[in-house]
Every structure is written in structure tokens, then in C-alpha cells.
Length: 258
Image (cartoon, rainbow, N blue to C red; front, side, top):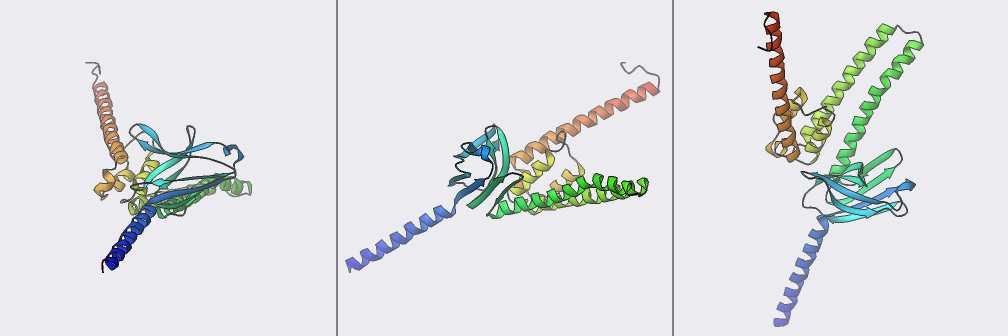
């Protein structure tokens, strides 16, 4: 009887250990990378994440014969960037699972996990719209050279440009909203805002923040952007009021210095 109990306890302990091992494995990330860029061979690549103190290293690996690999445990999915020295090569989402990374001439991509698949599908669609926009000037020049009326062609290209920009803005907006509750939402929001000359509260930003859950608005980078954008908007309003007051004094024949 005692022997049977001991066997049962041993079986239970084994199952518990096995479960813990499987749980540990499922919570780990693995990066399987490859590259056809010869200059990367022998170089060390770093995973870095943006923090209040700048870009901090998370993991690293050397490239050998075009291959590199990293693995570890991450408590939650986070946006990181692959760096060589101080140069950012490409972004990836560090999340549980096997992340395939390809760094090739003219094509850099991460796939194999849900958020990385979504991120690079987003890049594909955005790049396609940008390429269509970039081709408008070439198409306009070709049409004019083929004898089309320059004013009519220009009007047509302006209309197509407005439509493509509308599609781009709507796509980015919907992607961020669809990913409010994961790392993609704040990350793509910050990518969008990085194209601004300085943080500001545009109609698009207001639209994104309207109805956004707290988990999005309380993200550190989003919070910092909102704070700086509101400060900048207040300064702009104050400068506009100052210029308006000066203009009114000048119209009234009053020295603005008084």
C-alpha cells in the first residue's frame, strides 16, 4: 500500500515538474535570424528597448555565417529594435514563441508570432500606399510627355494624391484602434507621431485618443507625447494671442512696446 502511494506521489510530482517545464518553455522567446549581408558576418547585434534613459540592451548575439539566434524570457510583449553598434536596423516585437528574422538586402522582416506578423503586414500595406504616392509624379510626367493636357493631368494627380493620403490615414488610424490593448497600438502611434516636426495635438491624434482605453493613454511614451503636445499647443496659442495683440495695437496706432 505504501509503495502504491509513493508511486502515485512520484507520478504527481513528475506531472507537476513537466507542467512547469512546459509553462517555462511557452513563456520564452526564441529569435532565429538569417542575413545575406556579408558585412554583418562577425558583427554583434543587440536587441534594445526604449526607456526613459534611452535605448537599453535586452539581448545580443553574434552573426556567424549569416545566422544568429537569441532566446530568453519576457514577462510581456514589448517593442524592441535590432541594433548594430549605434545604428537601428529594424523593429520587432519581443513576444513568446519562435520569431523568424530576415535581414536581407532590400528586405527586412520578422514573422512567426502573432504581433510580428501583424506589424510587418502593417508595414507592407503602408509601404504599398507610399509607393503609389511616390509614383504619382512619374505618372504625371509620362502623361504630359504623351500629349495629355498638363492642367487636367495635374488636377487628376492631385485628386489621386488626396485619396491615397486619405486611405493611408484611415488605415493607420484603424490599425492603432484595433491594437489599443497591446504593444502595437502605442508603438505605431509613436511611429506616426515621429514624422511631426514637434509633438502637437492634430485632428488625427485627437481622433486616436478619443475613446482610447486607459491602458493606451497611460502608456509612458503616449503620456509623454500628450504632455509635450499640450504644452506646445498652449505656447502656440499664447504666441498667436501675442501677435494678435501687437497687430491690433499697430492698427490703432499704438506702439506695441507700450
